[in-house]
Image 1: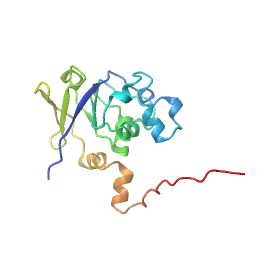
Image 2 (image 1 turned 90 degrees about the vertical axis):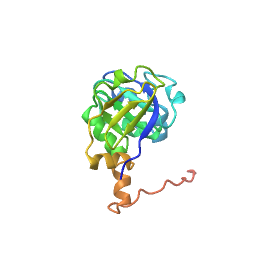
Image 3 (image 1 turned 180 degrees about the horizontal axis):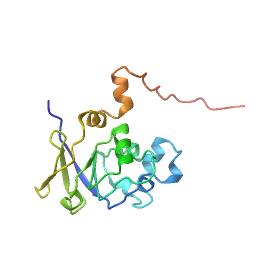
Image 4 (image 1 turned 120 degrees about the horizontal axis):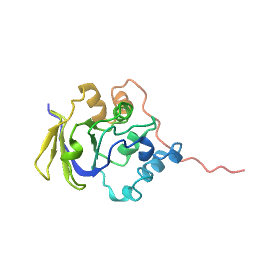
Length: 180
């Protein structure tokens, strides 16, 4: 069975993009919805209003350096289909697995995509990364099948819920207003 290819418009970010830029510290304790609205507000104000669900992020070296804050969850929540970088920080990669965000290491990818707006295509079968705007391609580092299944399956908790290994997350309910 082959995995479906993923395509999206590219947004470029440089080297050493840290989790503080993805999810600014003042939003660390905010709701997931508030965190999503704050993505990259520190270094690219207004970007959240330009990006579209299904877009890709192309990063340079050491993408996702910094703290263990749930920046990968925020990127997934805004609809980023895939993060591909020359190299990915190991803590960010683990959070991408946990939160169901496809993140790949692909040396040379920041040069493969010279401009924002180009269209990327990734094949999770053979980890080929293509620039559909130029026709050029590279091979990303393979992700072990069990980790790829978590990324593609929405993250560790949704996968464990579907397998019946943990109870489903309770649905949010509206809280009654507090009165005296």
